[in-house]
Image (cartoon, rainbow, N blue to C red; front, side, top):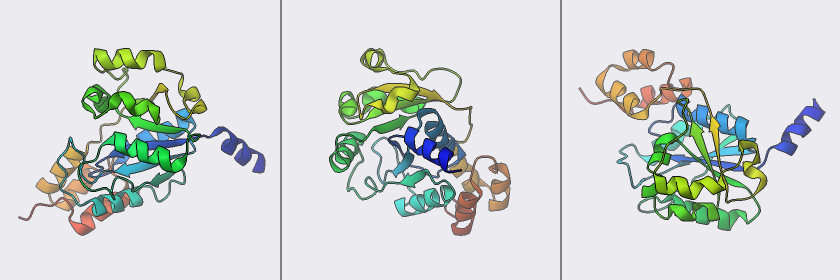
Length: 229
């Protein structure tokens, strides 16, 4: 219906940025992206796969991880992939990504960095974290029924900048909001362990609720996490 389509486009604003290693991407990641689209009324959410995140050891080649994201979002018209971090040499720092995106996209487009509870807890360890809001807004995802916790220093910094979720994209940057999704137990480390310790048929049965079918098929076809027996 033309009227409904037009109404949807009018009220959706801004780009959500969901970074991570995505090793592999799973249904929990998709739930966060869908929740951000729904609760923040974003125009789209872009996955930002990091080739060498400085706080993680990633062994799976970034090209494999990108292929899995592409498979996961093939039927998600409001989700995309931004390769700005995948093309960068050396350790990946979020502040560098935010500066580059703001420079390339201009000053007026709302950007929203989506952060999970575990990331928010360690936010004070991120490079130049106080500068993030000069380039983007922050959206904190609550998926365990309790507000995300962080250090007293970060909370004092965040408190005066908090706004309701639906107001987050009223400005291009500078604000913080929370949104909630139902609890989801999917875990990339567990997925890798299951595939490396069991035959792929047992692994696929055990992880059926955690992985998009298309991603499970890629992992199985290419033996991405299998350990040679």
